[in-house]
Image (cartoon, rainbow, N blue to C red; front, side):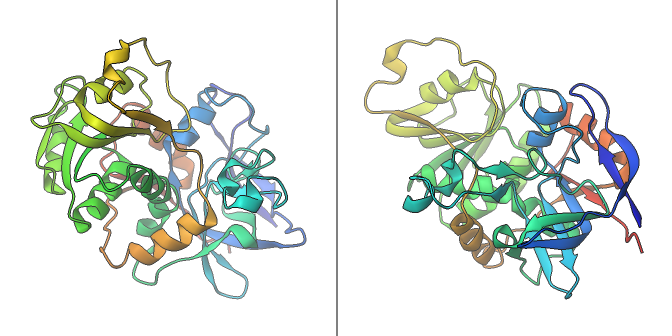
Length: 323
C-alpha cells in the first residue's frame, strides 16, 4: 500500500508530496499510523540546510502522535535511538550518545501517514490531550522541560523567544511559583501580549535588560546576539541556557558580562527520563498547548509561517487516516 509523505530531497528546496511504500518495521520497531506531527524549528533548520547531515531523501518530523497496530497511542520524540553502550549512555546521559540517531533527521519522521520507530524510545501519551495538543509536548515541551531543569531553581526567569517551547515552559514555571519575564523582538506586541496572557510579569525588547535582574534565562530563539544580551540581564551567579540545536554565531562580549560566576550552557537533545517526567507533570500543571493546524500537504506553508515568526504557540500537521 502506498502512503503519502512530505519528502525533503535537498536542503533549501520545498518538501514534495509523494507516495511511498508503507514502511516496514524492523526488529524492535513499531509501525504507527500517524495522527499528528508537530512542526519544530529544528525541522526548519534541517530544511534550510543549517543542520548539514540529514539522510536524503528524508521525511522530516519528530513530534509524532500515532497509533500502533494494537491500538496504543504513542509519541515519538527527537531522540530515536542510542547505542546503550558508550560512556554517555551508561551514565544516564544518553542525550549525548555519539552514535545517536534522531527522528526526522537520521530516521524518517512523521510528515507522513505512517512511520516506524524504535519502541524503546516511544512514550505513552497522557489521556487528557487530544492528538493535536499532544504533539508539541514531544519536543517543544521536552526540550523546554530539560532547559528549565538546567536553569536551576531560579525565581526570576527570563524566556528569550516566545514560541512553541516558551509557551509550554511558561506554564510549568508559573506552576512552580517562578516569576516570568518574556523577551521578544522589538515591536512584537503580539508575542509580548501572548506572554502576558500566560503569566509573564513583564514582556519587552530582547536586546535590552528587563525591569529586574534575572536569576536565569533560557534562550529559545536561534540568535547568537541574545547570549550577551541575556548575560547583561542576568544577576551574579545566574545561568543562561541556550536551548536550541542550532544558533547563529555568538558575538564577542566583554568578560565582565560573564564574571561573578555567571554560567552559559547549552541543552542537547533529551533523555527518556526527561520524557517520562515531563509527560507525567504536564497533566498536573495542566499544560495547555495552543496550536495552529495544517494539513499534511501544507507542511511547506507551516514551515514558512514558522520561519517568518508568525506562529502563535505551535504548528501541527493533522494527518488523516490512510485507510
